[in-house]
Each structure stands twice: as structure tokens, then as C-alpha cells.
Image (cartoon, rainbow, N blue to C red; front, side):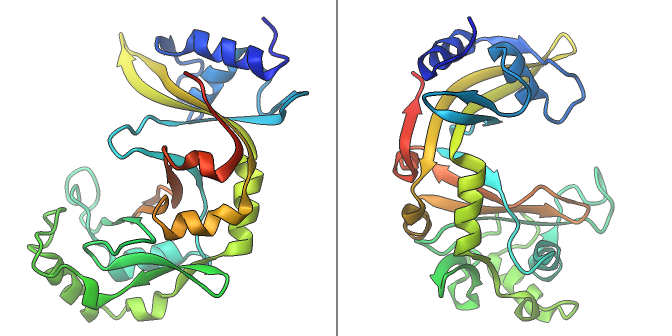
Length: 267
């Protein structure tokens, strides 16, 4: 069946969900997306439906435990600020000296606008910016450091105060311009089919299972900042010394319909 309407796309997508499919292109970082394109029999990259517009296909890992959907990656300003955060506020990677070199560091933070993390991190809306904030007075100093690198978060906080190359006060503020975010959301998500996938290796072959799929159309720009402020959209830093996995914008599944004028879960 050639895909010409949204209804046909939904039928075709439902037919390939909840079963394992061999990867279309072994060794390709975009193998999941390529596999989805092949299964749907649509051209590579974007395709057009008259009643929906140009659609971009996206796949993300199925993240049922967190209840968060990864929307897209976007690095904050100033340029190259994440490596500076890593140096000034990061901690020794758990696999340093093993899987990685001895000096490998890690910096990870799932950061919310409605609460402060155990390390004292939050994001705030300030003067047309979304700002990543660290407040040393908000650190849960007696709580055990979940990474195990320090005994407590207080020990980590004391350590980063001693660093001078660079000190975090010289790195912060790290931020996003709201106008840039609006443009990013619109350009990356306005007309999207997002398929959440599981991955396994079976008989030495990578396979994908598409567990959930969403059709999303037309970003409601006025909702971006409120959804960040109330913790529905989170900013997720994930970097190590020799590889920045990218700073992700993620949204709670139950709040995602508020971000789009048309949001459909394919059930």
C-alpha cells in the first residue's frame, strides 16, 4: 500500500509495530531510522502527505521507566559550553581506568524547571532565556552520591569549589535564547512521526521493535516556556571527556499533547 494519507500511514505503522525487524543497514548510526523508512516504503528523509504536510521520521529509544520522550538535541550557549561544564563541575567517569582512559570525566544532569536536583541544578526562565542554574546552597550535602565517585553530594560540591581551570563561576551562565528554542522546536518537530524503539541483537543481527508511535503537527510556541517551567519539558546533559552525547530536550509523555495542535498516539 502506497502511503498517501495520514490514515494510510497509521495503518502501515500499526502493521509493523510490536514485532522484531532486522536492521536495514548494519553498522549505520541511523539504522533504526533507515529500517523504519524501508518498512514504511517511503523515500529517505522527509516525505509529503497532502492532508498533513511534509513529515520527518524520527526514532528514539523506548524510555518507559522515565516516562520521557526525547524530542531533539540542541547545545546551549555560549558555544562549546558543555565541555567547560564537564571540566568545572564533572566527576570521574565510573569506567575511567577501565573501559576509558584514566582521566575520563562525566557530566550528566536531567534538569527540571520546577525543582532543584540533588546537585543543586535547575533551569529558569530569565529575560527571554532559559538558563541552567547551579545553587551551592541547594545541594543535598548529606545525601549519598549516586555515582559512588564521592561519598556525598557535599563532597562533590566542595571539590568543584576548589577547581580553577575553569571554575564554574567563569562558565555559568549557560543558557538558551527562547527565540532559538522556538525555531528549533518548529524546524525539528512541526510535522513528525516519532517511533519509540527497543533494540536487541539476535543471532548476531541487530533488530528493532517499534513499541509506540506518535504523529505530531504544528508546535504551539507559546507553550514551550511554560512546559519547561512546570517540569514537563526537561533538559538532559550527557557528556564525557571524549564524547558529548548531546544535550537533549525531553517531554513527559502525558504532557506532550499540550505542545502540538495535533498529537496522535497510534494505538
